[in-house]
Image (cartoon, rainbow, N blue to C red; front, side, top):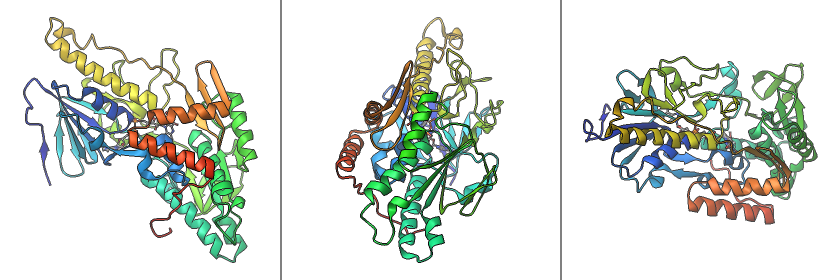
Length: 439
Ligand SMILES: Cc1cc2nc3c(=O)[nH]c(=O)nc-3n(C[C@H](O)[C@H](O)[C@H](O)COP(=O)(O)OP(=O)(O)OC[C@H]3O[C@@H](n4cnc5c(N)ncnc54)[C@H](O)[C@@H]3O)c2cc1C
């Protein structure tokens, strides 16, 4: 198939805006430009949904169902008459020709491009580790984690071999950042509470959850006291924690640590690093770091191409205090909003005597730090927001409130809220079905 996707009114005053990625940054930009007839917006994503990644770990640990944390992009933008949603994977960019190419064979021309394709799992230059590990960036990956862990418990129930059972009942998590900590806490909840009475031959509370962190503390982006709190809390929940130990190698069913020790596990989850979407390398501008991110100009456009903007996790920025802007949803949302603001302002200036100066007059992006948070098992979380450093139950309530607030779609909010309430009272999530054949 070779289609040329250029909206019918191309060539008129209407500007064609191409947004790659329907995550937090891309979706926010599309929403802000919606029903503004100065723009003909095309939003392209390789999936058909917007994904609320902060709750992925709950799908992985059988607390929530996949549809609870994702929503069809078409449905979200149904009423945005100037926005066209297409499901395609962009494979190439031609900045000079102002064109993007999709896996479908389609080519997409634009007046403005917003690249918001996020990041992907990285393996410290050891791509072969991918075959032996499970990632946690997409819904499919979260479902694979759940399937693997639940299948392993079923296999452990069947086997008579103690050694096999030990391996099947070990989950190793590489990466002691928020994702690793949240996963570890949730796995202990799953086996100590939810699955407690489900099996006859195995004791699910014996599931060994091993959390591996290369630096000397968990949750490195939080305060020291919060790291200590998370460590203590996870230990109380029975998580085995190794800090200050780098992963040296990963082979089938085994993590080899730099200190010479090994962890044999039938489920190895990789939450230790990310790198920018490879599309950043197609823009022909220098990359900011080894992760392949791009440092844009202050208006979020890239040097030499004022019509191309980057935002979200793949942008490498510092805030007004020279601190790195973290790869979190609020930062991505703010960048998406900013790009829409720049485009609207530019369109307005077109009709004024300032039209020649419109590039110079572009507003600068300013990151407003709303803080970071991570949940550490049931009833406990850590929140760092400005001078506020909360731990424990209050932080947990704040975590619940914020996540419900920012989840997209009323149905999703209601479904998640009911799921949580049910799981809290009954300790029994309903999403432990293994749909596909066990791995
Ligand atoms: C497990 C996990 C937990 C997290 N927890 C939190 C949290 O608690 N709080 C918080 O604030 N942040 C959290 N984050 C980070 C947050 O989700 C990201 O910062 C945010 O999603 C970044 O938004 P984005 O728009 O840059 O990218 P994304 O949301 O990743 O969106 C990128 C989109 O681009 C699409 N795409 C990628 N490549 C292509 C292509 N070639 N063609 C077409 N489409 C493409 C993808 O399908 C995706 O929809 C978490 C992330 C993960 C993975």
